[in-house]
Image (cartoon, rainbow, N blue to C red):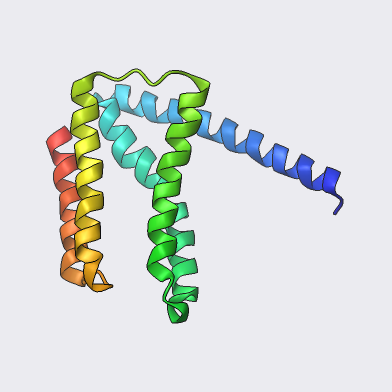
Length: 147
């Protein structure tokens, strides 16, 4: 495949991704309105988990493939941080991010707290099952508090 065809395929894929994302978001907002559920809950549960699962699956697959090299956790954590940075960066480039200070503190504190917790859990070079359950529990508490 020539460079021109590869570029066109990439461009077509990006346009398809954008259109699919728009349709998904509009559908999620419609579901939230129909079921009288907060748009935050739909966004946090359906959209964020739904969009993160493919990325997580790819990162975990790459990590499992790299277990022997000792770089498995780097791939998963780096992927998550890159995704957050990329999404916020692109969003900030396209329009200003205007959020109330209270929202930034609530969600930012949770994000930073989760990263610190992961860092503490990983100090010994591994995250045990109990530590993993703790991270999932923190996420569940975060979602429940937002209800």
